[in-house]
Picture 1 (cartoon, one colour):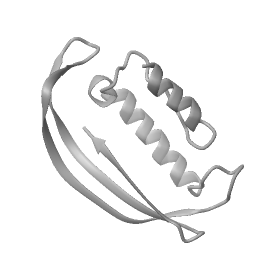
Picture 2: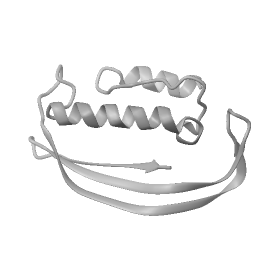
Picture 3: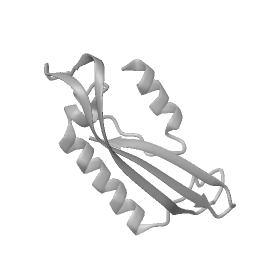
Length: 115
């Protein structure tokens, strides 16, 4: 999708951006093995070094201060056609919210979905 590819290009200076071949918008449902491998790669990198913001701009070190999860099941208004041809009538997974604090005392909160 051109919109998200352009967004990924903008994020490259401060984030690790990867494209998953043959995946559409529902990348977790369409390519779960690829997503799993990327998650393990990120976890491996975070264990090897401290999590830092873009080194070129600042040198904050981040510490996870809180985390929260909840199971979710959302019925879609219309089934989503996956790139492999299956219809997905609902999204099931876990909602994850993580809060981190930077060494500069700024707090950041992010959320995501694990299917």
